[in-house]
Length: 447
Image 1: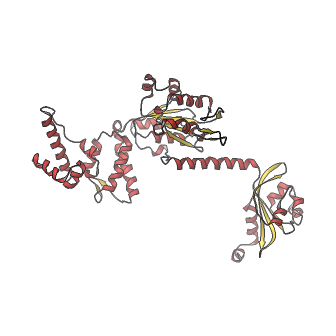
Image 2: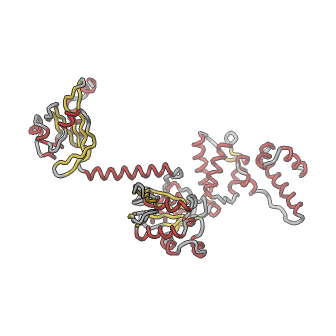
Image 3: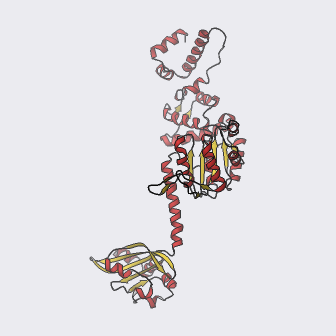
């Protein structure tokens, strides 16, 4: 402390004191003012000369500085009514050699509305953090995270940028693994609700008997409290309903009410609650088809489908494949701590000729595993799962007896594996055969 005082002039220390807090005061053991900053004086409509040396109670109405000096106990975040408004103040006793020599008081919020605004922000942030903890799948995505420059993807990204700032509901359709979640997150991030919660619920993952409680909350008559559901948790933000096609008809009616009347009724309750949410829904099944099958409400569908984003499967936008391949390869190399990994020519050919039924998610998962299975700095075909290699097995004739056809298929599969992998132990493992059985089949087909 001595060193601190030696290196800083008195004028600098005074500047620090004046700006360290909005308003503050220091009093001695007799509750007389030793120091008070200029901002506080202006608010109190007194000069510093008039205040210093006076009993603090004569200058600051309803002060508790004398009580802190008497008790020796800090009084933190305490409401203080002064000049017609409530403030929040801290009051701390000052000790020297174990003896109280005075007290320090500071205003931390000049009016309760300041506190309420911060409290609301903190509460919203904490709720969002809690949602992230409860839902480990939560990851923030932005539009620029969506890779691809094909005409279809460019058009969808352009549409997303246009409609995101509105409060209109959005329906995202596409096969599993096409990246519907990423577009839902992007819509939220580009909206005016981005500072409020993004809450996701997957209707296909929650048991039907628990789905109403999960979405709309439940009233506990014993404690007379409501445990909020996902709809209420998303208040002022975005509710992302994944796989909305799995939502039962009875709950579709409650969701429609939440959208139209901005009201929900928790389970076991007769009391409605107001909500302000934006709905983004996704489905890997055509909702119009479900309407024909009487499994989806037509009125809810028309409420949702005004803005529909149809995400194409990977096989229909293979011009994006190289971009996606390179992006995931670099990402997983970094995660694995590998500096340089390349794809063998045959590996690249196999990946590009595969039909990708699991879409972008399947590509991501396969490349993540392949990076760890890479031999030295090269991903060989042996690092790929069998379905990709089998998809490249040459065609065969379907004439003849079933035994002849199966024998030809077996030979073609063995030929394909032997061309890509020299280690027969690995081939046997991938095909689920013992090594002796593999050798018998190789001999049988003169391979």
